[in-house]
Image (tube, rainbow, N blue to C red):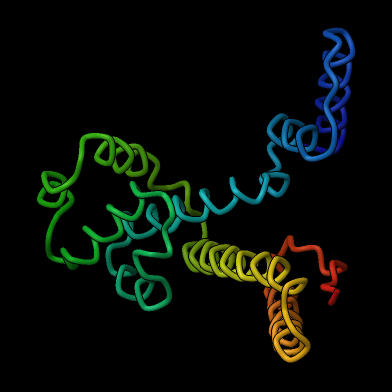
Length: 194
């Protein structure tokens, strides 16, 4: 979609919003506009992580030889969506020799439907290595951001020594998130001792 088409999509969306009297602010509007113009970067973080989990499973289903390599970098607990976790575990336990048809009976009907929908679009992954790397980076950043949120809650309650240790950990995690290029954490938040 070209720049002019994207601008038209945004204008049309804005006109429709004004006509219907709706008010959208912040990320809600960006997410909707992103859907209209096909920009996945405007997804909210939770959607990006779910998308990352989905794309890792799609990669593992379409290229079974990648299962072990992906499993070296993320375990079943790295998948928060139980359905993707079930597929991941089944693929990991099955190995390369077992077919999808042999794996399917071990899974719930809902999980099988998801697996089938992912297999219906085997060519949706253009660059497998980049998809896997980006998806793993998003999961790693999610875990880092979760820890940063925990630290932000603990800092006000910490004594001086704990505060120093937590703040040092926080700074390292912020740098790690920035280095990944995938972070959404607001680095300007600072913990304060009270």
